[in-house]
Length: 136
Figure 1 (cartoon, rainbow, N blue to C red):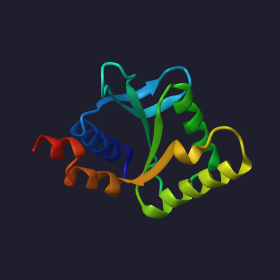
Figure 2 (figure 1 turned 180 degrees about the horizontal axis):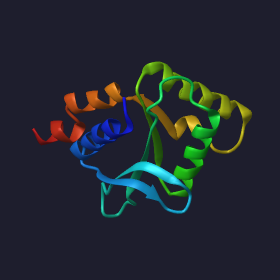
Figure 3 (figure 1 turned 180 degrees about the vertical axis):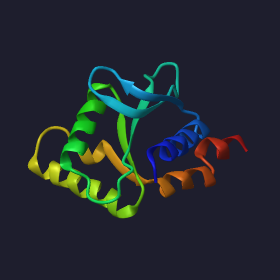
Figure 4 (figure 1 turned 90 degrees about the vertical axis):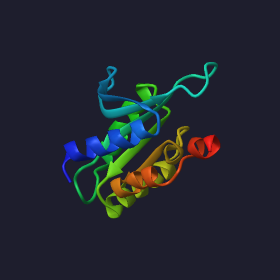
């Protein structure tokens, strides 16, 4: 799957869920494909999700994961989501994140990074969200 179609699909999901979508965000720390942001309550800070698309199938190099994590952390994002074309690629990212956490440090990346396939992300449009159920 190419990057443009992944980008459009992710934008569709984010906007459907009520997020404001920004593309190719660079706050000085590096490029982020999309940043989803939402203000849940006026007294709370804006919640930001960095979305990095990985269109390649297969093993993801550790440098891609670490540089994306640092870029999103420095850009003041609350969570990082890697969108992959297939499950083995998502498992590759998940396995490397767990290995990073075993090394030690004060940042537990497994709580910050979520790898998800594009098909799993699109399933979110089919299932009703909590806010939809509450308004019915």
